[in-house]
Amino acid sequence: MSSVPDGKKLVRSPSGLRMVAENGAFNSPFCMEEPTWVPDKDCQKCMRCETKFAFIKRKHHCRRCGRCFCDKCCSQKVALPRMSFVDPVRQCSQCSLLSQKESDFYEKQIKVLVAGSPFVVTRDTSDKCATMTSRLSNNHRFLFLDGENNFEVELTRITTIQVLTDTTNHTENELDAGDDLLDAGCACKGTSPRAVGMLVQYKPSGDQDVKQLRLDAGTSEEEKKAAELWLLAMHKAAKLLYESREHQ
Image 1: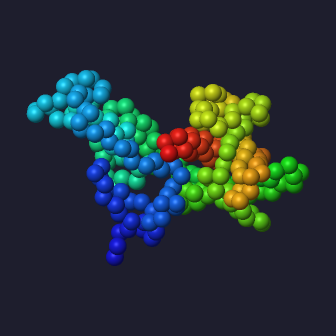
Image 2: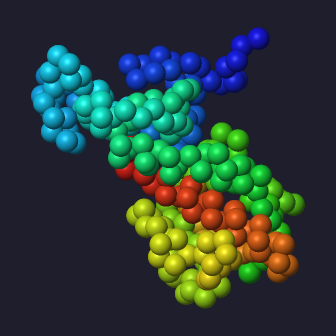
């Protein structure tokens, strides 16, 4: 039996073995393409410590940024799920730190997003709302809202995300330029203020008009805790989504 999931294929690149979607259009929106390596002829010294390369001082390319380093500055092999590598790959010290920070999202937070959380959802400027479960699709490409009337939003169509807190003005904390909402005071577990909702603006496929969703946490403490964890994970997802767009 094949170990390759449906809709996936194994691809071998100079950097290593990757598990990618058979149709590139179906790749996770959090993924980044492999970088173009700096040509060997342009690498006479390490691009970090400036040690000159020689017969006994080999050069190595970072699989995340594509730059050229000596073994000391590019010795770690770290998981890089954003580029769909099957095994940990060699990365420079700076990129390995980034990849390690992202590992929490792929190991924990993405599971929270896929599992979903209940919210009171309001569409556009309607005064009608409904309790729905907001969750990320298994392929990470859609935000599903499950309820009496289900609908979905493609992540690549999202233009802005605003995380709402219980103490901040709802026009603040907008994420459309890679801002770190947590550093800016958005709620994190065990701290105040607390994340209580989210505004999402998006453009449906084939429609240039911007639509809006508002998600508010329920009233019980259990619902608020579940919503806060989901919003924290969605905050990180939004940052990765922005970074992936910038990387294209």
